[in-house]
Image (tube, rainbow, N blue to C red; front, side, top):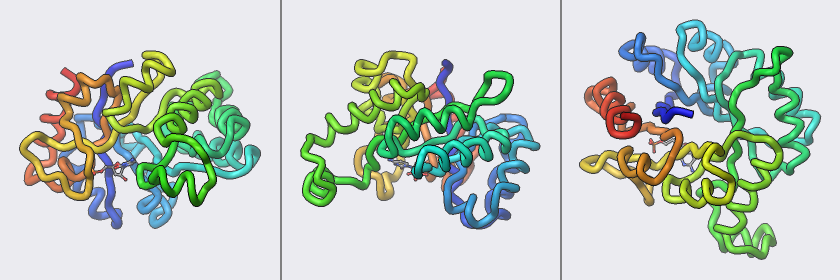
Length: 232
Ligand code: C5P
């Protein structure tokens, strides 16, 4: 699987998104569409971007009973997305049902990746509030293994965890990693950040990059810089 850069399109308004992507036509980047835009604009926004030829990672982080997730995934497959995700916390049964829902009649399906534990979750909250008496790191690796054993393609994780995930789940299990900043850039609210070049060395398969591209004076140049550092 080749390495790729996914642009996190964290915009509220459709017009903002359309203005932003107008510079990228022809470059065929992967775009990440999240809950904010999807719930505000509906599935048509995804259809429109697919019609324009963009690859889409639909970041909706599903979690519900297996049957509901299976049917929701079938709906997402109908949108033609290239990658989508769910919470590994929803159980192996739910992850397996999700794969059934995503699978097309031709035996093809979008990539399905798992969120292990949200990075906003601290070990203290996990242990004291959720009563999971584990080290956070071992819980994350265990959920990654559950995802792999359920047939998923990879996990969202920090580039700093990518090597360990590959050790535990194998080289082909994808690591999709946010928290990317240029060496000379602003960290914003991300704490543990890595450059595209470092993410490549650490073994990330996809980097998810938002503000270093979306807020750059020249977003296309910033995207090309990410591709040059990470993919080439
Ligand atoms: O602007 P920035 O590059 O920080 O955006 C990163 C993107 O990745 C955002 O869409 C953010 O929600 C997402 N993300 C993250 N950290 C995670 C999971 C997702 O930053 N652990």
